[in-house]
Length: 446
Image 1: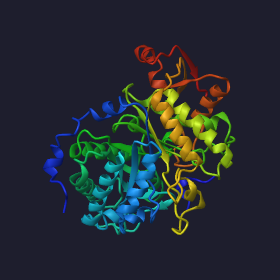
Image 2: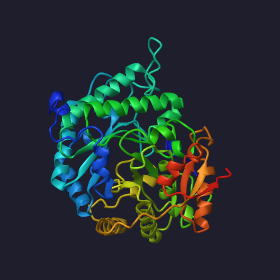
Image 3: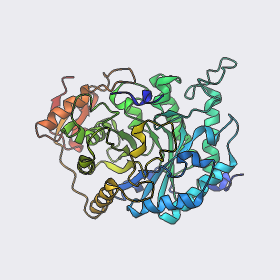
Image 4: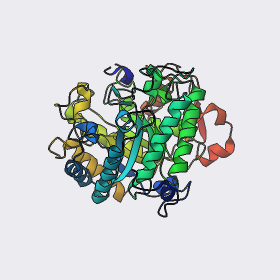
């Protein structure tokens, strides 16, 4: 198994109008409204034509066709990627043309009936680095500033500029769901933009707070990957579980370390997503807060194609059975055109739709599951027994994934139990345990 971080190496609306948009929810209501809307189903949008390089060669017709295909699967939202160096080619420059294209995409999404989560700081995506040339490692430090994307005052000011310009452009759009501040930012953190846990947490809190200022009432999150949940690295689990409007999980048996010790059909593979949801919930202070499985996918590198529908079925139902999920957003909408070279082979065939915009078997399966679970969401399975884990105590490296907590959870699953998870610092809080319906505690022994 390999680590994902080693896996291939103008404005249309006045800012005052955005900040006072009449159709926006008041601050703090976005997460409540989302959680009351039932389990949501969506996809991470991957344009068929030119991938996300399409921002530079915009084709509204092609985008509209793609979004129509997504809507035909019964999806209600998409997550999109603003490639950072394209949107902000200079430290003080944001592309007006790409902002116009972004607004056009939300207009097309409106026609298709899809809400849009906009992921902004894409310095890493699909196994490739997309950091702008004016940040580390390419930028030359000046006046003692390190040009680190988490700790440099000049870079953070530039990041805020980008968010502000995007909020001016689409902040009042009725299909704008909210900001995802960045895609898997732990990857550049582990490569060439290091940050201590204190620095990473401080940056995330400040950036999410800024998003609430410039786009109040929207659904802002931090699209962190597995490295912070399986390791004591970068963003702390406490911060990820208590900032933004939902806690985010990226669930892949390939990258999360499952296949290094289990088979694709073992319970550990089929219960990976619900383990991550229960882990996040253990760190959350707000018991009404939801967990978003923002990325989940599968390829033939992990299992035979004939087993993939069952894998999807089991994972989706296990997520729904927690009763703690905001939504499930599959990776990804479409396959990548093989003419677009440079990605690892893993990335090309993850779509629910093919390059002719036709549903693949997994696409049809996801459509069926979404329709069924919208009609009748199962009652959350009771979790009266809880696995007690240390608040910290995992590897401080970014990779490989430390499975000490997860293995103890999977051992209980193997014994037929459906456990909750409680951190040690709360194991004697009787009111908390009672609120969660927990009556039996089992030591992790890890």
